Structure formats: structure tokens, C-alpha cells
Length: 162
Image (cartoon, rainbow, N blue to C red):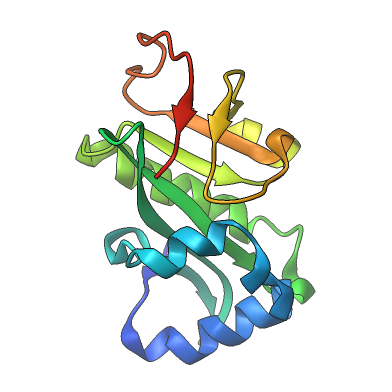
């Protein structure tokens, strides 16, 4: 864990460059950026994996709500330098930040748009209820992690993320 640390303002340019290398300029057209444009990043859970002063991976979260009242976080972006993919840096950041978020007991869920095969190891599930998102999105890629078992106790007819 000694290579994981919270982001600082001095990291902004390096993280921007990492995001560009990881996702390219097309990332701004994705629906998740609609939320990121409207809300501030939750800096408490923004972390990097650093080695020899190089940022190899970064993760951030943005606050979101389910049906206007259930408080959660949108995970992302999670970026790993293309030269270092498959080495576990992203996995370590996801595990570390989820453990921090769980300890706060402030959030009911974490939402992510990503590959189920990657995120299922952290407990994320596919959403099996009709839902509205911030914009067009592949339904198969919208995943949720129920942190407080509050979502299981509800019989949602519809889920709206806002």
C-alpha cells in the first residue's frame, strides 16, 4: 500500500495526461462525463498508484443519487497507464478505495460503467431493473455495488440515477 496515496493538486496535469493516454479525447463524449461535469470529484476517495514519482493508475469518484434520495458514488474514471495494464495497479486502487468508502458508512452504493468480468471480483452486480442514466449507455455495462444492503431491501419498479 505504500505506493497508494491520495491525490493532490500537484497531480492534476499528470492525471489528465494519464486519462488521455488511457481513454483518448473520446472520453468526453461518454454519458458518465455528464455527471462529472455537473458535480465535483469526491477528493476524499481520489487516489493514485505511484512508482518512482510516476503515476501508473488513478481513481476518482463523483457523488450521485438513486431516485433522488439514496446517496451513492459513481466510480471513475479508473485509469491505468497502457504500458502497465494487467499488473494489478487498478485492482489495488479499487480495493483500497472501496474499503475506505465502506468504513465511512456515508454511502449506500457505488455505481460504475465498466466490464462486468473486471468489476464482479469487487462485488459489483448487473442492474436487473429498468433504470434511467445520465445519457445513452450500454445497459450491460452499468454495474452497482450495494454497500449497506439498502438496495436489496427495496423493490424498485424503476431506478433513476441523478
